[in-house]
Image (cartoon, rainbow, N blue to C red; front, side, top):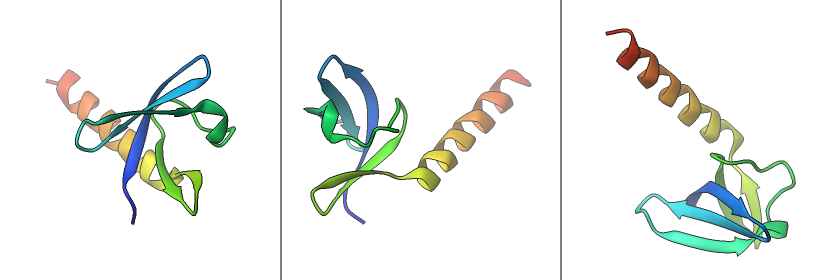
Length: 73
């Protein structure tokens, strides 16, 4: 798979994306899928951004499980 990015935030017309190495990239927000939201994992495939729905959900579930384990102690 190509490089993946996390949608950190949208600032007016720019979306701030972060790659796995911590690199920060700015892209025009209107080029993202309309259903993209903060925290989604995205990939650029064929010149179009795609939300990686299953990967995003796995990451959210793992983060939730980690938070639960930290607060249950």
